[in-house]
Length: 78
Image 1 (cartoon, rainbow, N blue to C red):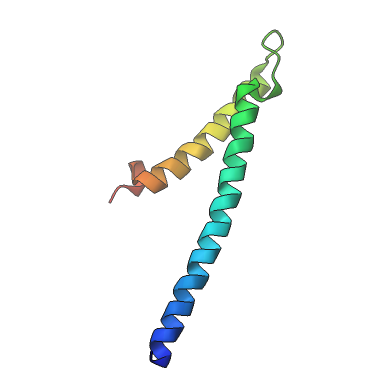
Image 2: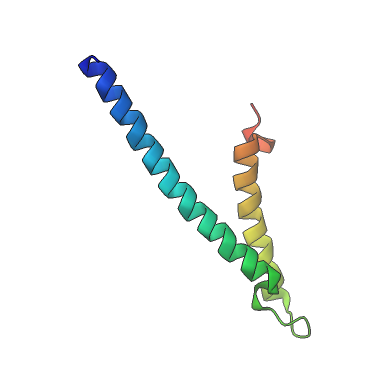
């Protein structure tokens, strides 16, 4: 194995390790958000006000942007 091939292999291994670490963090955040969503983000249906609706609208827009980036929709369309 040449030095260049060895460096490329190490680079790929390090890239994979970094990717898997971030994926684990991402998955943990999704699990937290899923649990919070199941609990209606702590909002009492009898007392929900516009602040909760605005917060959820903002959070949804951020998640939509992430989904659009991944699936190359909207402004991210190729």
